[in-house]
Length: 340
Image (tube, rainbow, N blue to C red; front, side, top):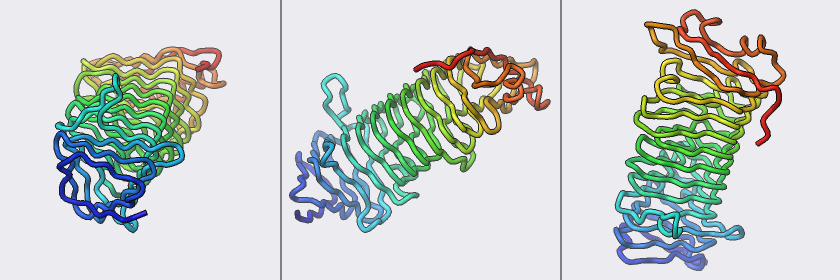
């Protein structure tokens, strides 16, 4: 094992090896356009204080089960993560080439990196990775597309921030002891397990905040022990869709928190979910609501645990329990839980 110091720019295709690691990024580093940086299994990469790796070309970081690639701060220093530009070599799911991380381990210091992986228009694939102790794990912008599968997130304030116009496919991941997820662009969010989320700040849980068109499909997930709400529909437009189906909700403070104004703004569907238990409400509405006439928030057929219809009515917060809400929830009941 050797120590290799790097910084400034990589202007020819380069491979980082386990034998020459750890690699220490001593100053901000740029992978130039049309240039590939390949990182081999078992390689360790340390970032000096407040340094960042910018990729305008290609980054291939593929470890394996026994030899993960690790990224962390040098001597537990705060570091600034990865920044991908629109000029990068986009990941192509058809030939599986382009920017990717596989079997990698990322560890921040809690508040840093502010954005561990930030993409402004670059398509990225992430699989079988672990991301721990950062402020925002992944943020995508400007029509960037993200695929993330079979990865673990722990102790991050914000797991994902999929900004408006971006796209994401998020499947079979585990997210533990984090605070929030922000979905604003078209997202398939399936077969994930989310557990022990905090209720810190103005927004926590999985927050849908759509400013444009698109579909957010949340299905076949498990939401367990959220200190506040598990899913919050904050905003959507007439060109957007909000779909929640075949999920399990257990031991959350509130399972769904819905804007009574925006729920009917686009296309919304909540059905075939197992709402096992709750601490405060199964579903809670919040203002603003329509002022001219009473809103009706229609919820499809779901399993509500062992509650009777009368008990479910008490487990939802609408105008019957809060006169300031000019909206009422209409729901249907399934006699048995849904098998996923």
